[in-house]
Length: 191
Image 1 (cartoon, rainbow, N blue to C red):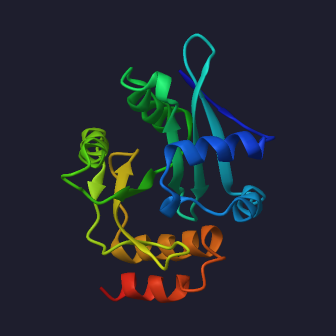
Image 2 (tube, one colour; image 1 turned 30 degrees about the vertical axis):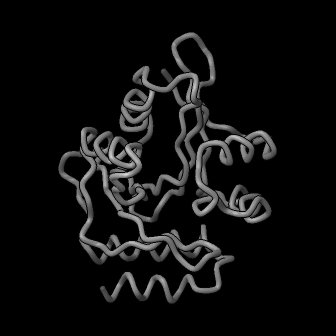
């Protein structure tokens, strides 16, 4: 398994895959995503299995403290339940030199077993739920989510002031089009 950084992205194909894998409330508008792709600290990787087949993608924003915010990570449906998610995070930890990653995760919903599976998957990989009342900025005004941090280096875990600084940075870079982003950040910071 390996991660291959994309230097050129076919936006139509990538956006089509995003639409298949993520709810509309978590998707950026296509024109906004086009602008984000131009950021020098926004990265996209193909997830390639041992046979050289692209089995998913991974996008993230590099944060100032050598951590990352995972924007989208998806394994294509035909490769689900084959261990590729775990292998991908192992590659991220070993091939990329970051302190750890932030994960925006849907809140647990007993009516949607996938939310429980996703949370258990991240916890099994070492992610910890942060004590933050997190809200994902979107065009509807904001989506309550949980924010997790997965350390890649055993001795690193960000303090609350660093977490808030990273959230502010990410909001400025990834959600500049949402009119209430500053208000949402203030709600998070003051909760």
